[in-house]
Image (cartoon, rainbow, N blue to C red; front, side):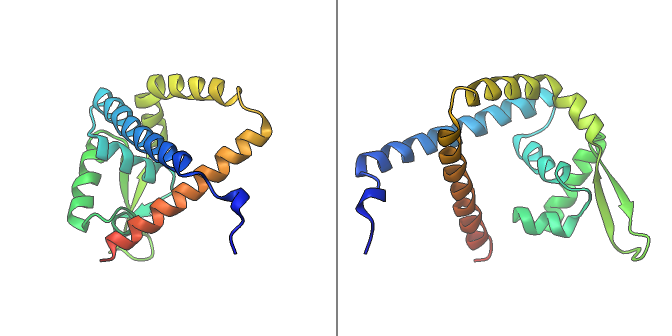
Length: 158
């Protein structure tokens, strides 16, 4: 039996679905602009984020996370290495394995203006919500990320 008090009205579902599409589009457009401003493609910028969030990662791990082929990941790493945003390092125990290491300071310098503005504006927006509203937003966004990751894995494994 479902709890009717927790079910969203169809108009709320439609409204949040529409807003979800709008935020998705706005996010892509903004990241494309940030990337273009930094001399990258939007895709390279987003995949760079995965590397930056890792201490180190192999090309194979990056391919698994993104759904890209290993050849496409090699091209990505080549482009990011040319921009001095990552570097390759041979594994000391297994010389066949190559680690991709982020060069965070270079990335921070490259993106500092756009990211600083974004962080400041988002911080001001968050300050307008009370603790209960923030928990609801966190719950919604966390669940949304989970759904998107699940669908991505499903589509990548077909």
